[in-house]
Length: 315
Image 1 (tube, helix red, strand yellow):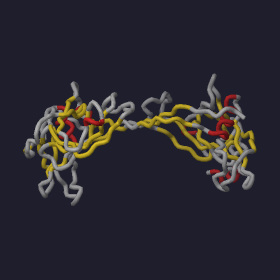
Image 2: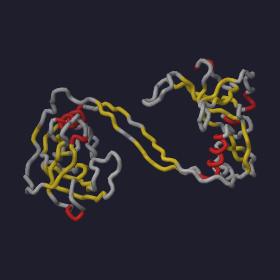
Image 3: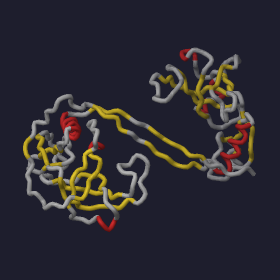
Image 4: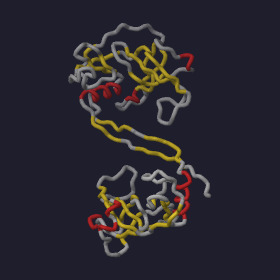
């Protein structure tokens, strides 16, 4: 029985979005150390601003300026900051109602300890030294010994030079993956350039990669079966958009490949022929690169295409 493996995994998907006039004014204002909200039809001031009234769905666009000081409405202590959070030392997540606003803004509060934080405490914005037009232009909040100003929001036209019109939002998940016994056996076989699945004792399907149980019958699988290495393209797609960190030139083809002897198709990249010549039924084989623990891609074997009836149940 092989050792159970673990590996650090990262799922990252930053995306770029355009901004409407309200969000553009808000983020550009932060760059200029100005906090803008939006006034609703009934007179409430929302910070951060939105483009539609959450109560009535009415289109709202009357921008107003609020103060950089405010009051903590609620909070939670974060003793162990994670990568990418506003502060690297323990801090409090706080909801702050800025003077002149009727709603609260979520951000970090730099405090010496949890016992220094309380609902109702007064705080002010600590601006980032370098600002680009993002919520991170507010580095954090900090305690501020001052009474509530009683300030009301003042009208603002939202006009700034060189307005921010789009932002890139990071999205990342770091986690530790444990494949379990079935997939550990599968990975060990791949190290020897073999592809191994497991057979269900009831329906007799062979699953690759194995999960340790049949998803159809719900029973444990234990019988190991060598499959492939050749297989048949069942369905495929042509990729025309290059991922940020990808080294593969577009266009290229990703396909579902039914390995010989398997009861389930797996994913694989197709190479070795022009992308517009890939087709259902194409017979392919894996290509391994030096030191790789899985096939780099699949290429045509030169065999005649498989008959549709031989793979139609694996689409």
